Amino acid sequence: MNKILNNLEEKLGDRIASTQSISGGSIAEARLIEMESGKKYFLKSGAQNPKMFRAEANGLKEIEKADVIRVPYIFVVEPDFLLMEYIRPGVQKAHFFERFGRQFAELHKSKSAQFGFYEDNFIGHTIQDNSVNEHQATDWCTFYFEKRLLFQFKLAERKNRASEKLSKGFALLENKIESILSNQNEPPTLLHGDLWSGNFLADENGLPVLIDPAVYYGQREADLAMTKLFGGFPGSFYGAYQEVLPLADGAGYRENIYKLYHVLNHLNLFGFGYQAEAEELVWFYL
Image 1 (cartoon, rainbow, N blue to C red):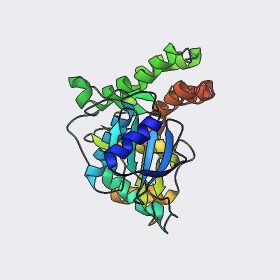
Image 2 (cartoon, one colour):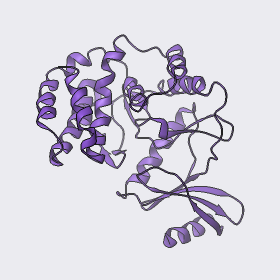
Image 3 (cartoon, rainbow, N blue to C red):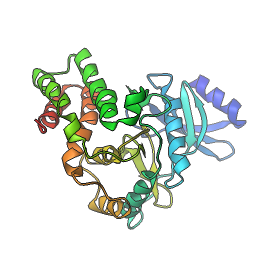
Image 4 (cartoon, rainbow, N blue to C red):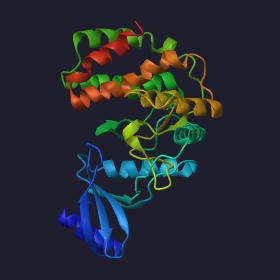
């Protein structure tokens, strides 16, 4: 840590007055850094993969380009640390989730010519494979099955976390995936990729801020399904979203196929506690 702090002082041309450990998730160590000049920064360090912080920074910058919702400004990114704007957490303003839902819908108006992203990144500390061949780049069903579901399932097999019930169901699911996703024909949309209650905050003015993305271009229902995985957001969020950018028919039916990606990832990251839920999501369609 001393090496990182000395590096920061050199890059910022300012001396560090104090550091304080703060909440920053389970993937990296987080610190509030205060300089002698009075400036404050948010420092993340301790990533398991040296590419992780660069990928996080690039994801935040991609969201920032849309210019519809605040993200932390990136000051310095290195393989061993990421220095960002410190956003002092505030109290959610009245109608916070209505605003958040509208802004999230506006974010989903940002489009690309193909699915994926220009680089691989991370979902938690699992690699998220965004490299695509010609068919995966333009066919959502192929992209989602091969680059999201199959990638995670094969990882679960390598970790010996794929039960017989999960394996049997997944083999059957492959034959049904096209019919499940048959109504998904919108252009590739910019996704946060990992939006749950731990990956947004209210800033000092009580307004929404997005953090810790796993950005790629995909179908927006995938983003919304993730928001419902751990209890969901208030109904006002989804109502406001629908007013700006209504979902296609059948979105509720497809929700579980999108939750499956994240539950498989949690099975791979955190173990067998997520196995039954993964089995349930697979067999929902069988």
